[in-house]
Image 1 (cartoon, rainbow, N blue to C red):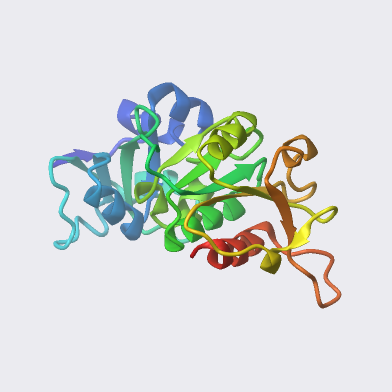
Image 2: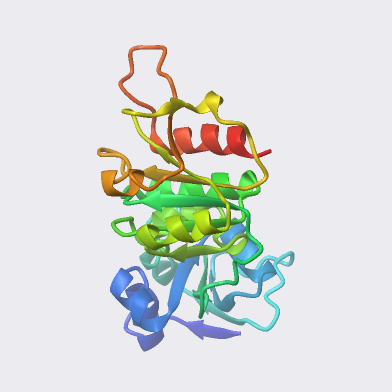
Length: 250
C-alpha cells in the first residue's frame, strides 16, 4: 500500500483535477466518494485505484481486488471531497470505453436537458430500481460523472447502461423496433393512465423549467401528463419520472 503525505504530490493534483468535467473527459476516468459507491464500483471491476484516509484505514470488508490502494493524510482526503462530512474513502474509476450493446433492450429512459445533478442522479437510480434496460442522456444535461450526480445515483452508474446520445436520432431508431416513445408534456397530451403498461417502451422526460424540447415531442408515439390535484404548478421531474416508469413497466 502506497502512502502519500504531501498536498503537492503530482498524483494528488491529478485526483483533484477529476473534480472537473474537462479532466474527466480528457482522461476517461472519474472520482467517486464514499463506502457504498466504492463497494459498488469494486463489484463491477471498474476501479483503477482506491484512496483511503489514514484516519479510517481500509475496512476489512472491502475487497479491493486488483485495484491499487493508496493511503493519504486526512488533509488530502478532505481536499478531494465535495461533501460536508467526508467518509475518507474514494476510488478512481474508468468510464466505459464504448457504448454498450443495446439490441436486446426493451425499456428506455430518455433524458432531455436535465441540468440539476440531484435530479439526474435520482432519475438514474429510479430507472435502475424499476428495472429499465438503458438510460439515454441527451444534449444539455449535466455531466453524468458530476460528483452530485454520482452521489444521488447511489451506484446505479455501475448497474445499467447509461450513454450520451442524440435523442433526435434515438426516437426513430426505437420506433423502428416497434418500441413506443412517450414524451411528457402539459399540452396536447393524454393522462398517463390512458396508456397501458407494456413490456417495451421509452419514456422521455425533460428540462426542469421548460420540459422536453417541442421539436422532440413532435416525433413521439404519444405525450403524457400527470394530473395535478393540489395547488402546486408542477411535479419535480425526478418524482414524475418515478411515477411514470413504475406505471408503464409491465
